[in-house]
Structure formats: C-alpha cells, structure tokens
Amino acid sequence: MLDLDCGSDFDPNRDEDFFAALPSRPAVFLIEMQAPGAQPYLSRTVDLRRAAERLLHRPEALSKRLNLRDVAARIRFRLTGSRFEQSLVLYQQARIHFPRRYRDFLRLRPPAVVKINLRNAYPRCYVTRRISPDEGLYVGPFASRRAAEFFADGFRDFFKVRRCQIKIRRDPKFPGCIYSEMKMCLAPCFAGCSDAEYAAEVGRATEALATLGASLETSLEQEREATSELLDFERAASLHKKLEKVSDVMNCFPDLARRVDQLDAVILQRTAEENTVAFFAVHHGIIADPFLVRFDELSSQPRSVEAIIRSHLEANSSAAGAEPARSFEASDLQTAQSATPNATIPSATDLKVQFGIRFVPEELPEHLSLLARWFYAKPREGEIFFRDPTWPYRRLLRACARILAPPAAPPRPTPSS
Image: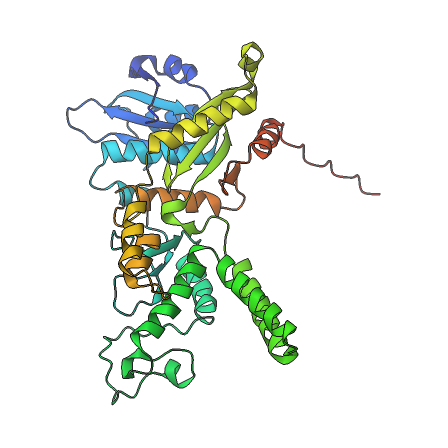
C-alpha cells in the first residue's frame, strides 16, 4: 500500500505559512474535514502548493470555484514522480476512502479482452469486458473494444469456429448462418461436423491465441515446407500467403495483450527522489507496490545493481505465490491426459486444464485497466519489460540510465533572416 506519508494541519489564521510549507511538486493529496464522518477530498495534481491555494485560500467575491477553507482540518499527501505512480496511489486511496463508488470516482472501466468460452459445448471467440472464473481463456488488455474487435475479426478468419450466439441443437433441418454458407464455420448448428472435429478446431484456435499466434505460424511453416518437398508449389504458395496474413494480423497485437493469468512484467518509472528508479512488478496481471533502486546509495552496496534487481523481482514472484488465476494444477492435467491416453484430439477438459482460469482476484480487472491506461497513453512515461521467459536484466539496467537522464532541452528557434 502506497500511503500518504506527509501532511499538516490547516489553520486559516496561518494560511500563508501553511502554503509556504507545501512543495510545488506533483502529488496525490487528501483534504480531511472538520466534521466527523464527512467525506474527504481526494485528488492528484502536478503542483501541490498551487492546488492547496486554489482549494483553501480565501475565496474571491462572487466566485463559484470550490473552496474548502471553512471545513478543512488537515491535508495529507504523497509526492509522486510519474503519472503511473499517481494513478496507482489514487486508486489505492480511493478504494479506502470511497469503497462503494471508487470505480465511478476514477472512471475505471474493465478493459476489453478477447475470450474463448471453453466451458461451452461449442466454444467461440469473442470480445468482452467481463473477466470471470469460468474456465475460459482471456487475452488482453486491449486499448479499446474497437481495437479488440479489429484483432478478433482477423484472428477468427484463420479458424472455422462459430461466430453466432444461438444455442446449438445440431438439427440437420436448421438452415445455418451466412458463415456456414461461406465455408467459414464447421456448422455444428446443422450437424455439419462431428463433435471431435469441432473440438480439434477449437483446440487449434485456443492454442494459437494463448501463444499469441506462435503455434499457428509454426504449423503453417511446417506444412509449407512439407508441401514444397512434395513439389506441390501451388499449395506451398497458398500457405505462404496465409502465413503472411497471419503475420499481418499478429503485428496488430499489442505487446501488453497476453493471457491475463500470465501477464508478468515490470514497469520502470522516475520517482520523487533524486537518482532513484521505481520498479513496479506485475505478476499475473496484479500490480505490486514498487521497490526503489537508489543509485546514490549503491556505492556502499557489496552487490551489483543487477543482483539487487534480481533479488527483488524473484522475491516478488515468490510472494505472489503460485499462479493465482490458473484453473488447475499440473497434477490435474496429468490426470485428464491419463483418462484418455490414446486421444490425439484435445478434449474440452484438456483445454480448460491448460488454458482456463477458475480464480480471478477482485482487483484483477481494475489493475488491468490501470495498466491499459498507462500503456496506451500518448505520450507514455517510463518503460515496461516482460518476462519471456526470464527477466531481461541487462535491458533493465540500460532503461534505468535512460529514465535518470535529464530531459532533452527543446531546440532553439533559429532567427529569421
């Protein structure tokens, strides 16, 4: 928890001394009221002193601006070094002081994700904003629902998985939908395929989405090489074009969008302290409180900076425990596979074991929303690195140097002739 670690009482008779004692720096602040049980005022600012003067200074005549001078008792605040830190502190404090309305207060909306509902008898791939412990595969977050829909439309073109929302009855008399007529769906609605065939297609789609397209590209490359060896160059050219289309679709896939239960990253930000970098570790989509690397104090440390960063990241990983959003343990997967030892087609249970989630922390959608706000902001402050499959420690060290470097001075205007 990032507490508001500074503060002072407000006395209207000594307001000038009060304002002078406040730093003119970015901060998250809370103004507590004199009346017991009164709602406090929570906000963030780029200049704490200016914000306090605006809210607590003697009001001007006929001014309609909010003024808390007559009701304020004290101010508590925390200096921040980045917009990301401000957002996280504001979120944590809002949850404490406004537990019923903090989402509305922060305008915090669940992010858009792509889902495959593996619990359904005939799963489909679609976009949603609701993350539930329903043994489904969730990949995200995306910048917007429109961006998620754009990716999902391109991704679904590679698989003949249904797109309709009707209840499947497998009735041969059912006319089917337009996608079945266009040969873009296996048409389980009128028994156009067997359950095993549809399950195999869902397995391909699920694995491709979970691996961010890697399994699909690998299978297409292998099939292309095999057809080339058989001198079926027409088929090989067709597979090559499909592989290029897959690459084009996956290039639209943002770096932040991953399996929400396997989103492990670290965000580097400037802090309010000099020559200090904050490391915000993200484990399974949950943002941990930062650990600080104070470079002014490292000269007295017997360990290297890389060793210090490594110990913190590994400690945070251990503190996060086993993957909280995974659906089953490894033993469950072995049990499911041993139940069908001769099966070559993944069953619904196998897919749910490998990719589904059964536990979703209450704060997971909110933390994903905070991550999406920061990651897709323009411009974006700070840097992010993902664990694929290990932490890039050398790149983290180089990023620290970039973050601590003074901002470049704007170019001087050239005198006109």
